[in-house]
Length: 165
Image 1 (cartoon, rainbow, N blue to C red):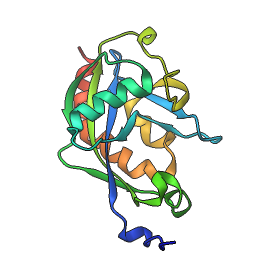
Image 2 (image 1 turned 90 degrees about the vertical axis):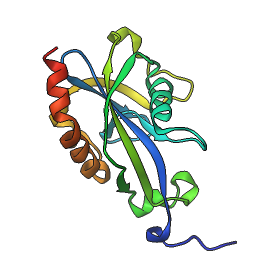
Image 3 (image 1 turned 180 degrees about the vertical axis):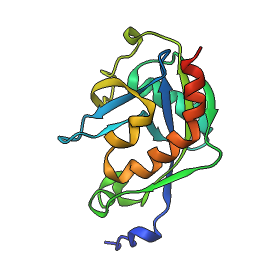
C-alpha cells in the first residue's frame, strides 16, 4: 500500500464559493449536515475537470440550495486558500488534498425564500438563514475563518451597494 504524502506536499483542490446576498443585504449561510457542532458556511464546492470556475459556482448554488435565481455581481481577484486540519485532511477527498483553493463569487439573489430548497439530491445543510455579511467570520468553522475574512473584505463595499438598491 503506497504511503500517503505529507499534508504540506499535497495539492489544493480547486473550488468555487458563493456569497449569495438577498435584497436586504444579508448573506445565505447553511449549517453543515455532517457537523454536530455549529458549522455554518456559504455554498461552495469543487470544480469539475474542464469546467470554468463561474459555471462551477452556479452549478454548486443549484446543487446545494436548489436555486439558480442569482446574478454574478463580482468575483475575487485571485484564488483564496485554506488548509484542512490534519484529521480531516486524512479522510476528506480520499486524503488527496491539503485544502481548497477557491474563486469566490458575489451573487445577488433574484428569487424569494421559497425558491431555496436545501433538501436537494445530495443535501449538505440541515438548516439555513440570512445573516449580516460582516458577521460571517464569527459563525464559520475555525479552519475556514481566515478565508471568510478575506471574502468579506473583498465584497463588503459591493454588498453595501446592493443593500441600498
